[in-house]
Amino acid sequence: MLAVLLAATLFALAGIHLYWAFGGRWPGHDEASMVEHVVGRTRGMRAPSLLSGVAVALALATGGALVLATLAPTAWDGWLKAARWGLLAVFAGRGLATYVPPVFRYAEGTPFATLNRRAYGPLCLAIALGILVLQL
Image (cartoon, rainbow, N blue to C red; front, top):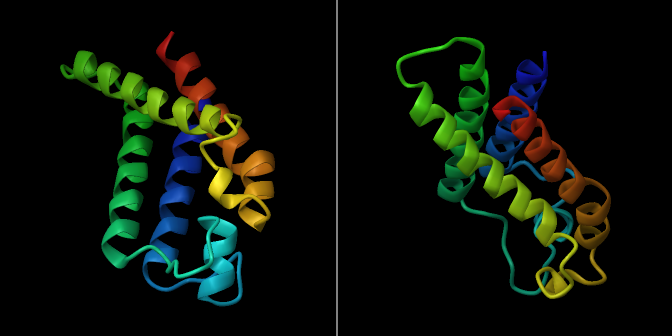
């Protein structure tokens, strides 16, 4: 059940990144407010490009597939487990970075700063914890 929940979360995040890649503006209402909520900068900052949005979406979807792979043993289990450790490290690092003041100092005073502390960081830590549970 945990693997399915984690994979669904990663696939949903991939979908959101695709939405942004193709011009979606939620949780903002235009490009500037979207950047303010999702990236944390406004002056001169643009929304992520199509290429970067698709790349992140593919990485998240690959993570979802890696998590689902725990449900069906294969000859590649050693490699898949190593890849999941890497995935865990990425999410743990991103989640912990939320609480290291200098990392996101550039975003102080933006909606991103609040969303990062209340949603983005905790979600990354929860994903990392879920992957850790699957790995053990």
